[in-house]
Length: 214
Image (cartoon, rainbow, N blue to C red; front, side, top):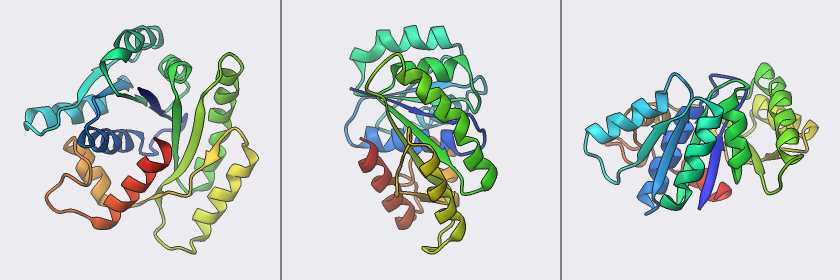
């Protein structure tokens, strides 16, 4: 059983889109998946509700716990019921994010190749240090989300190089390029591999990212 948190103290980096796409693919692989929405806006829960309302299989369970102590206690009681628990933490330093990190096997940090996005990594790196000071076993990965498509992109390269300042975080070379396919699919509670008009490049990127973290 794996508990994964998709989190960043910076908002707008595509956490919910990533959570929905990964969760749907893990469910399609035969995993029993619970999505935990740790944000009071409950965007992930709304997306999964749309999936459920459309009768799409496999089904994905979802619950919202925006309060840290509640999130922690509820996840602990449900660990034996699922193969994967994937937590969407809000884009700020919240009790829900801290509680989720205290339980997680994996912290996956999406960040964009923009200067102010990279600067924000200092805050999440500090939280990683706090969690690791009281427990072992947290694996931390960051990947470029909404990345530029060019192989020689200067912004992509500069962003990946900036992570060298944060040894707490392992940089993944598997990136998700800025494509409408991801957000369109997530808005319907799906992965890019489930929608009618499939984007082969998006599917390959998503599968490569999942393989790198599980």
